[in-house]
Structure formats: C-alpha cells, structure tokens
Length: 114
Image 1 (tube, one colour):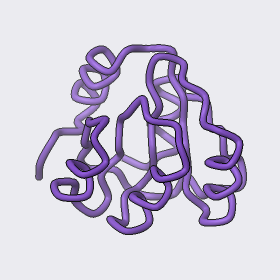
Image 2 (cartoon, one colour):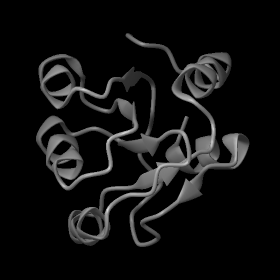
Image 3 (cartoon, helix red, strand yellow):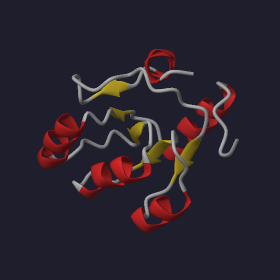
Image 4 (cartoon, one colour):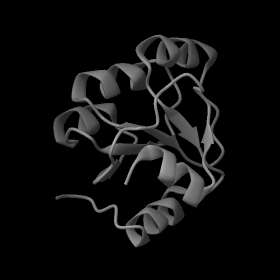
C-alpha cells in the first residue's frame, strides 16, 4: 500500500508537504531506540516512533525507510522538519498511541516482516 493511501485511510497528518507519498509500504517497524531501528529495520519499513529530533531523518535515509509516523500527537522539531524537507523524507503525525496505530496498520495488511 502506498503512503498516500495509508495517510488517507488512517487520517494521518503529513508534516513535510513536499515529500513524495508514492513509496510502497509493505512492512512497519515500531521503536523509539535509534540503534534498534538502525540494526533491525528493513528497506521500505514505515517507522513508528515518538522521537522528534533531527537524527530520525538520518536513520530513514541510511536505512531507506518509506517514512516516519510520529505517535501521541508528537510534533517534529523545527530542524527535523527542515532536514526532512531537504531529504524528501515524509513525516506523518497521529494523535493515537503506538499500540493503537500499529493495530490499525496491521488491519490494513502492514505486518512487521515480509
């Protein structure tokens, strides 16, 4: 499923409007530990986290993830938004907690592994 369709179906707010929403999402990864995401995420994962600092963009670029979904209504830091815009990394927001949004993603066919 493409990021655009996920965003529509889950009412996600895109905070980086210039980023493409055409990436295909087949799997997801939920973690707030950057070292964990760096070691265990796979290409194309949608990363679910509450982290909002600049380093999240670097992780997405290094691991070639499809995007970031911030939970609990978290707002990305201004420098994070600036870097995400520069690198064309889509960052979404949801007011939902991690447990609930992961369940909804799973219901839409987004699993943890292929």
